[in-house]
Length: 339
Image (cartoon, rainbow, N blue to C red; front, side):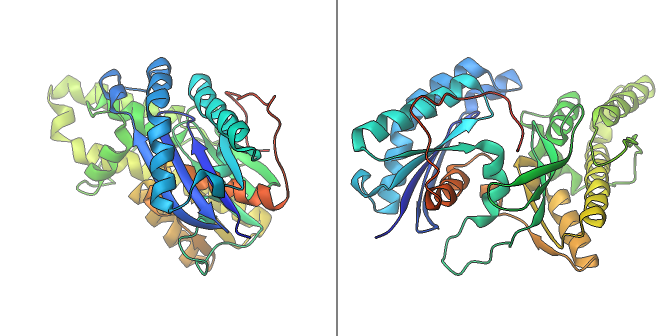
């Protein structure tokens, strides 16, 4: 008998539903929220309301595209946290209600675990996936972590950001440059046209494997301030070069710590995940680094780097095989790290 998992993701501003059957992805539907663009960031209350409007049609579309009915579901996996509490509550409540109505179990998924396990999303049964253990460079708007994944449920954080995450650095600097939110994709686009050596920004000297991006952000702001003193149109005149230099510096910081983690652990497989793993500079740098050091690299398709239910359903599939179900008394949580 086939195992069919419905995954539900509602941790931030994307409502997503996906169907995984026997470990293979059949559908992945995402409804994004453009309402936040004018505010320069996600507004939690607006996100919650949009999830309430989107979740039923998104789940319905995922089921129809997969060609399955609610009666075919073996379990419902949902993101329990971390994330925006109101947004998580919408997905959690929907999953519980549907579970009660269908009398099928529910599975809670850690959002960050989902990003780590995104490499196991398969469109075909014979798709290549990593073997444990592997190192994961998890980079997003709220997290920059180096994780040693020993199994799907045994993950050790080797290093994490002590202030801003890489995605925050991209978005905050992009805002100073007058770019729309989210700024990361715009910087990525502009960086392809600029000179990465045009400007030099500060790189942190943090012991161990922890990250820091606040000093880089401050250095970037000082560069803008000093440039505006002599050229009122400094930003527009140097937009591509600023973007290229910023991206290059962030990538260098990420790769430096990754290299240290590889040397300390001896692990020969590297994966990346999270929204910033969609960045061309990050993707190319990790691929080049692994090729140069004869390491196996797994870089997800861009559609699976941002928040999506395919990773939730895939993580849920792993947990279903071990019969790791959750109770209806389980509540969402806003903050936690990979355990």
